[in-house]
Image 1: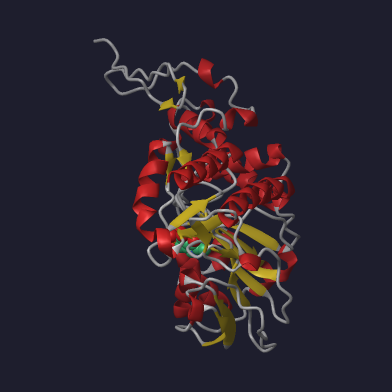
Image 2: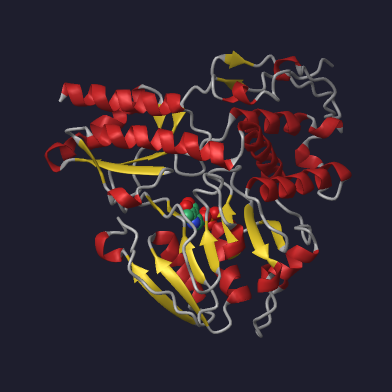
Length: 403
Ligand code: PLP
């Protein structure tokens, strides 16, 4: 019986003559790797993306990440097995998680005394893991959006929560500046980037107590002084990998100060002790994360990424600010470089749907704003090329010229 053949992957202008042959017993026995010869060249990633992907998350990943992940789904580390079917305790996968951890440490200059964990449960799981492990009596929280609200709700299950400031009064369109962090708090929790509202804190705040940050939507977009933090956590599905893994950078000396019993899986110490292998970790997202981390390193690290990100955002904000029909929604001084939120000015409000359709025709996807803000949101994560920003700006200008 002839092997079953199918075209595996098609992306942009490159068509992969990439066929998997399955024999009757389902063994993958022949692959054509020639099209992947350049996969270690990071420049390879940007050129052929078909769509301009502005989704807020899950969101654009580099072609480097996607292609290498696709490659490993077919044949992981020359094992003749798919990454989907190997033991997480195999030497090949152990090497993956170790390298990924080392690269997170290298890229963010994580000091001694910290552990990089790869966990399941999403960033939302961290909303409860943080207070479970760290909140002995009282914690301080900054309320800057939906994700902060969710984190606060969980923390209240474990002790006193001091909400030091909130921007709820203006639909979270700004970052509160005037607040005092109580020095008797166990930690100060904040969201570095408010994905829904397009505001961001791009520095490590001064605080009398250790910081804890949800960096889900802007990790690896700037250097961070990790030494100020007890925990940094980030769901992977923006700047790192497909959904399914969350990284947590945990200071070892911050653990062990609460009296309550902590369920094994929710105890950071469990995962520290077992090197994220207490149970089966999300193997595939971790593999993808490794590809992204390698790619970031090849691009020159987070300082270089920050330059690119700032340039993309500056260009788009400039186009918004010079427009007659579009206007930004976030306070100018707090604007996010990751999620650019904008609406139509009141006199053109009825054109909103029309612009989405207009943009869609140009291959622009994912710009519909979150329902709590409305309008548009263009997410400019690390993998988004400047070319996509240019296409969006051109679409905005052409649309404006017609109205
Ligand atoms: N925190 C921030 C800043 C987010 O943007 C999100 C999701 O978009 C979350 C937390 C929740 O992440 P997850 O869906 O991984 O629980």
